[in-house]
Amino acid sequence: MMHVMLDLETLSTRPNAAIIAIGAVAFDPQRMEVLSTFEARIRPDSADSLGGHVDMDTVSWWMRQPDAVRAQWDDEGAQFGNALSQLHTWLRGNQHGPLSALWGNGAAFDNVVLAEAFRAWAMIRPWSYKQDRCYRTLRALLPHIEEPPFEGERHTALADALHQAKHCMRLLAALRTEAQPNA
Image (cartoon, rainbow, N blue to C red; front, side):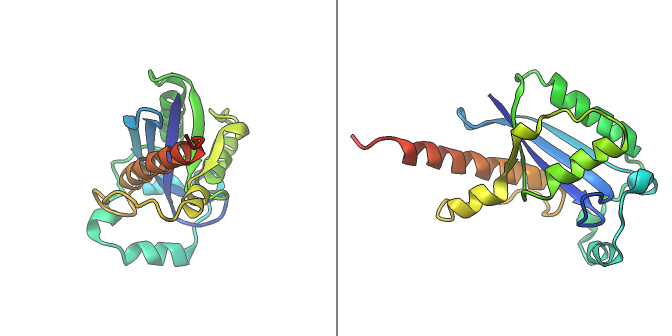
């Protein structure tokens, strides 16, 4: 059973936000194991192609972040369409089996923004709406489950996705434990 945690770094909070980085982590919640990762940094000159929205307040927020975080604005990054194609291939061709769930941090953000990007580029979305899951909701339902220590830089797509995937596995394990009938 392969789940994927998605994290996007964007230049807006709208559904058609310009995406500057994509991080994804395939994981097996039963075995509590990270299976593989995907990361794409998007060239700034292609992030807003095909109408990706740029909000100046969001850009201002990014400019106040540490250098390591702003490094996601990589002139050597992928063209946006190529990054989407690579993600599509990674999601569909992952050797860990078919996708069971695509988790995003917010019911109306990561998955929605990515679905809109695939639509704008006339690409088939590589997951079903039935596979959309909300990490933020799961976290709110189990506030007593501690997050693991954060590794890497916050607000970088892959580091955020890894952190969220590790916490999601803990949360799902707690649900399985709490669902066990009392002996």
